[in-house]
Length: 398
Ligand SMILES: NC(=O)c1ccc[n+]([C@@H]2O[C@H](COP(=O)([O-])OP(=O)(O)OC[C@H]3O[C@@H](n4cnc5c(N)ncnc54)[C@H](O)[C@@H]3O)[C@@H](O)[C@H]2O)c1
Image 1 (cartoon, rainbow, N blue to C red):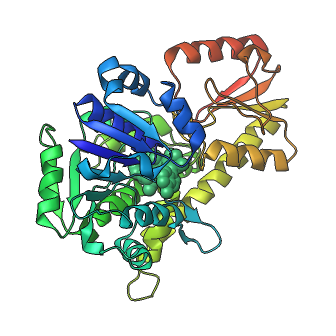
Image 2: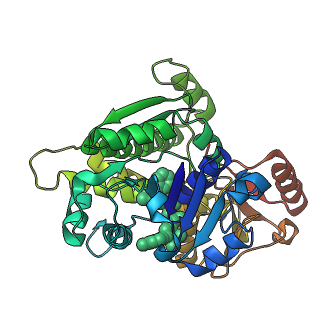
């Protein structure tokens, strides 16, 4: 098929490159000219394991084109246009910022779009899409949804082997085109209405941080009670109704999706018609986890008369360079406010505005080295060697 991917971020690039490697022709549009120039030069602007190999494959690359102008695309022959632009939280209104989506939909609304299957991959409440469509003069029933569930760090694997494929819309013909596009995938396809398709996305992104917050609160309780964290969590997780997968304490959870999607879920019902006491407290639990982690680090730091704190891992999790809502950066700022010398070490992210160390050998004697997430064996061995050389102390939240 002929596909257009609007937005070449984590979702757009992985989706487009994935479909191109399956034999489809893909035109990428991004208003960020720097990204487009990089892509044209066969460079990937983000770090995502495995993406570069697929992207630079000669056959795949020959099926892709990149532009920052909507006019350059052959719209007449486009089958599906995936909208993959960001939908961040607008901190002033504390609700989803639809500007990027509005600009993309507005461009599409000016085309002869009746034959194009316009498919929103961005995470967005359907009532917000309705507002956007009304504003730019597009029929909301023309829009289909294909929410994205990829995890940064394993996005390529998630593209080729998704747990499920969700498609939502009101036009059966358009949904048939999407089913055809996905027909070689083994995953179950859930075909549903627009609202349900987005609720699947939002509720998945509610349950996951809920579970992470549960295990973080459990860790706090175990710490307070003097229990053995590993034994307790193993014992709880071995219950087959609970499971030990995705059940690891962390300094706090973060990332580009959970925080903003949870804020939006809370907006779903802010007319007061229903109350969701559990869901409405997940963010607060996470804020408390960040504070708890900082207090814990300070306690260890003071009790052992240490010289500095080194946070290992700048992003919100392993194998990504995405710094959006990274707990490490919050913890760094909170420790700095307490006037504790704090540094960040990250193997792949450049940290211009933070005190960072490029070489582990530069860790000062008697530091507190805190892992923000599990690291690969090789790095762990280096960290252990530096710790024993410098008389430092290692802290891991799990
Ligand atoms: N990152 C993830 O792990 C992930 C996972 C699942 C779902 N999502 C959702 O997918 C969407 C995209 O997320 P992302 O992380 O890929 O975002 P991103 O910020 O990495 O990329 C978005 C891209 O869209 C471009 N853009 C903005 N407006 C545009 C326009 N009008 N025309 C063309 N390009 C435009 C930006 O320049 C940027 O390159 C969001 O709604 C997000 O919630 C993200």
